[in-house]
Image (cartoon, rainbow, N blue to C red; front, side, top):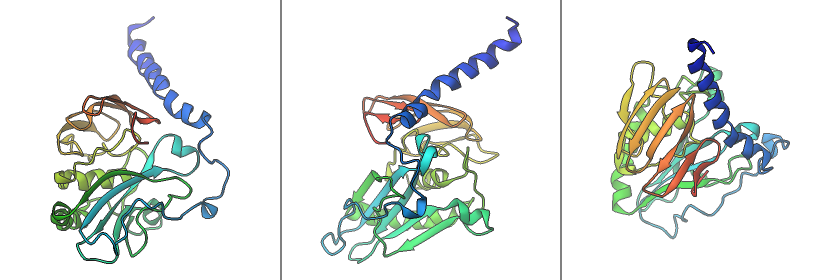
Length: 253
């Protein structure tokens, strides 16, 4: 075999191996591939504390599988906060269709339940803080949201997308300690000119080239490699594997 063919073939073999995760998720039958998005479940799941009962501040981040076949690859995350004594939650998320129509993809919501199904997909609670530490984070989260640099730019793959947004906020607010799963495709997108950054959890570092190739080494994330947006590695802190399509095993998404 010619030497110049070896590395392309090895990369192709690696990508094929990594695609076994998403293919397995598709084959499992757990994804709804038929129901129209507008007819899917959007009810609350009871994971967010009732503001009438929990009067302390609350900060939460959720993630849920994307609609239809794309859910075999990735998730859609969002941030929810409630100040101490408040009666409602505020949420932030990126909605790509808004950018495609020339608007700001960053959407802010008031008053709605923050833990609703994402068009049929059950949301996983990725991180939660309550009390004074949560109250102290909210100002910093609001400031980071306001400074997000790609509100009018959206790319499903490799970013910037909804995972890019949540990861960016997490880097700006390291107290959040958010460990995004490998299914959060786009979390490693750092922009066209930045290649080194803190890991989203704030407990380590990552190198990434346009979100297409990179490596993360952090206490919370463990060791994770990124090849064409497909993340894989090992999380020694949680004794879990990080697998494309599957997520953390054992663990969420």
